[in-house]
Image (cartoon, rainbow, N blue to C red):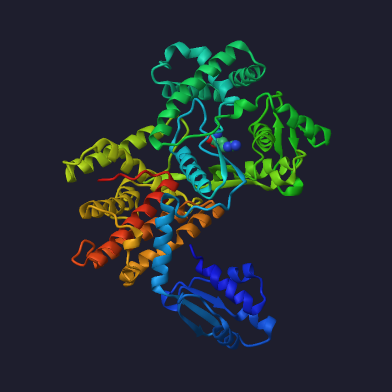
Length: 569
Ligand code: ARG
């Protein structure tokens, strides 16, 4: 596809001797469409060329040449050069490219040869998979798909929280009251009850807490009983988690969780020790980070047990060696910002190539709040993700039963729409913002929602079905799509590739989500203004093709967010 901005940059660079990439950076897209499709501010040149910006703009305007009637108009406004791309050129450029690339429209090869590790979802074994983990799963999955589309080799890791002192507690509880609970039938709920109960007891009784710590130590040393209980809990939990991943349609390349590193932490300790970086503090071993303005990073507890930090450090070593990553992303809530600052600092001491330590990125996100108030994850008062996803599906089912009872495959459609609504809601805002979980907002078919986007997609499908054909690109007369609403859609479709790249660069799926709503709304105006199935055959072909192209982009974009499109709804 012709990159108009690039073409303009090339021409300006030729006339000014300023490097192309610099000119490219300077070119803006005016927020007011009346000021053109692109604008070049000449203020920056004023200093170099020792002339008034306005004059530079005038001179450049005379000198610049573009091929094939690409430019409709170039205006000088103040110190700006405003460029107006010829409408037909836009239409032809976009639609031809879509015809050629189809499902790959918007993709690129900028990530070719680069490895990117994405650590996401990562729920804790023997604890419920709660709505907080939903965000990690959904954002991580979107970043995975987006980077893959840009040519990166992605490695998705579910870093299960399957190791740590909480297992000492669980084992203690299980030892005491295991018989009383029906763990096989309803594992996580029952295990959670044990966890809550042992926590309460440990709060009152220091010796119980001591016994818990001791259990974890034993687990780390490979004690048979402790290992057996741990394994059992892990397997039962994974089975439950898998049901959630199936609902969300999320897969991972690796399930190496914290336990995987239980025998790989010695090296971390050795390297730090060798450099005299481990300091004794109340019996524990820490790395002092005062110089970095951070609290100390605990490497070993006073009883010799390892920590969450140490496991993460061992994982960095392992991932650098195994995946040779260019970047390693970590998706957690902002509650863990300090943790990642600490381990990223300590990682610099691990004798790794700078490539790796520079590639470590924490991608934090905000908390989820229910409309009814704060979400409590302690004391067993928890909303489970599986229940929540199933509720989304049944709410959509009810709507379908009421509004479109004849619809076939209602279950499958309700799943796509219900799950899509939850995912979309999660991705629609900048990730650092706290999210309010409100059924009425996310399931509103007319709002800025997943269901709305899907509804517009389905409309493109049904229009094509009604027409009975999809025209070929050769049949499209590009001059038939030059009205305001058609052009609006075309210009949005043109931006798709750029939107995807921005979203990846900033690790912000909302950029894609908002874009898709823009496309859906623009299509809706186009559809309201223009009769698509009409008398005049070549007009119909052109409009149908734009309909087809819009559907394609909506579907591809939704796919990047991990949302499936129904064909009917
Ligand atoms: N299991 C942790 C939690 O639920 C998240 C793990 C994030 N990844 C990591 N490498 N620390 O809070």
